[in-house]
Image (tube, rainbow, N blue to C red; front, side, top):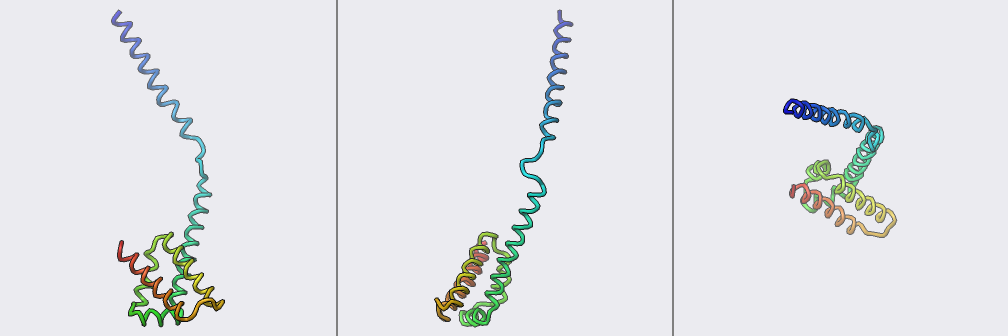
Length: 134
């Protein structure tokens, strides 16, 4: 009786182990929810978007009006420009949108030189504050 019980336990244990290790194999070979090529495309798009936003901010801060505004506010233009690279994607996108809007408004005559200078100083100060808080 003991021999039969031992044999039954061994067979049951072996069957359980075989089932446990045999079943996950087909499950693991399923396709991914997102294809690696789609992930790569998204990464490239995000990188290009970040680069575009960085260029927008750098170009905005490199204008003669910006340089004048930064000197007037006693802010180091080099420090502000180098701080742009340390911003998060969201922060950079937000500031780039503000810079684009300010340039468009200035070009359309909706804001004056003084207003543009205030916006420039505000964006530069915001960049420095964000970097300092980290």
